Image (cartoon, rainbow, N blue to C red; front, side):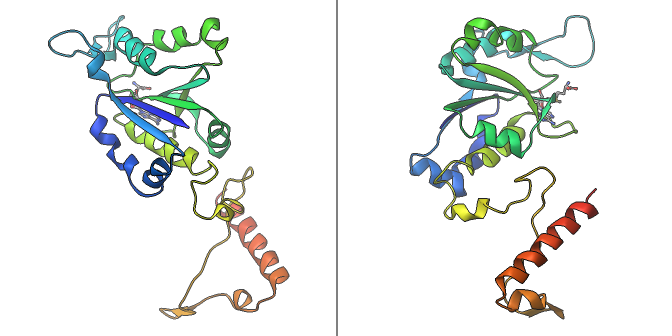
Length: 227
Ligand code: SAM
């Protein structure tokens, strides 16, 4: 999978080189490029924003700069993700859908966000005919200072679903959010007793059917408690 992230703070994305994602890139499973939006400007001040039409607080990111940046990375089959708190909320189902994509392009906004004509332009039928899709995505009902952290959240959740990225693919089998409302049971490791708290007896029994039943009950209880 090819991933392109466009931002005015490319350094913000440095953690994408670490841990599982770093290994996935070395193994050739994921190819991540981070692009500096300002390199697509043509004025001496590398301007990426201007005042909003209609008035109001803050600045809006310029469509022409975003258009040049997106045109430089777009290809047939690209999924363009415009990060915004006003978008569709990201969840595990969307992560699964996106994990099949050939290329994800993350547009990280700053200030009041990106001029809406960028979304409108890449929604045209000429792009749809090339299987290029644009979607606005939020990572939750709160407002961040910029889209960089949101892009990293999405990239981490999506790429770990790509076959070969996780060392042990069985880790994906019983995870929280695998199906609507499912939350994983609590986990325990050694020692058997820690600060006076013992591991539940059933987990030491070796009775796999009873362990599975207990875990399923615990998962249901968690889901209920979180409602
Ligand atoms: N004026 C915008 C609004 O009220 O919807 C908020 C802009 S926010 C200060 C600046 C940028 O941070 C956004 O363009 C977006 O890229 C990013 N951002 C903020 N919150 C986000 C969220 N919950 N999910 C995804 N991106 C977010």
